[in-house]
Amino acid sequence: MPSLGISRSHWPVVAWIRLGVPVPPARPALMGAAPPPDPPLDILERNPVPTDPRKQVYAYEEERGDWVLRLVWDADDPAVLEAECRAPIYGRRLPPEEVGRFWLAVKERIAPIGPLPIEGADPRP
Image 1: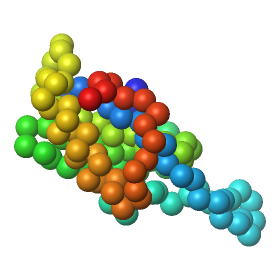
Image 2: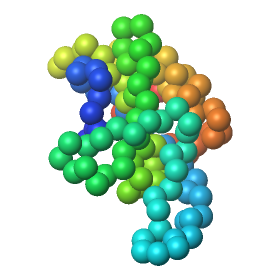
Image 3: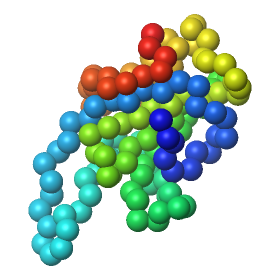
Image 4: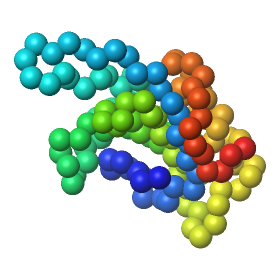
């Protein structure tokens, strides 16, 4: 799963989840193309993509002790919200006891929009 935007943490992604987000109806355009939809969570902030300044990517990062939770939403693919677990773990996967903590942190942060269907994850709990 490619990471979008610029992460404050340079640690590798050791676990991720792709969640399906309900897409609101398109906003009417007065002239030209319709404006992009708003991010699904208020905590998401604009996160520029240096290689394509036209992209509208929003992200949220939160330190959770010895790892970082990162949520990413791309206006070009509004039906998907990605969650990353970034940790100083190199060459191996996230330990099983940490996977549950990561999933719980994601559930806490997406609570305002309700439970979302999981489209993909690595690893699964």
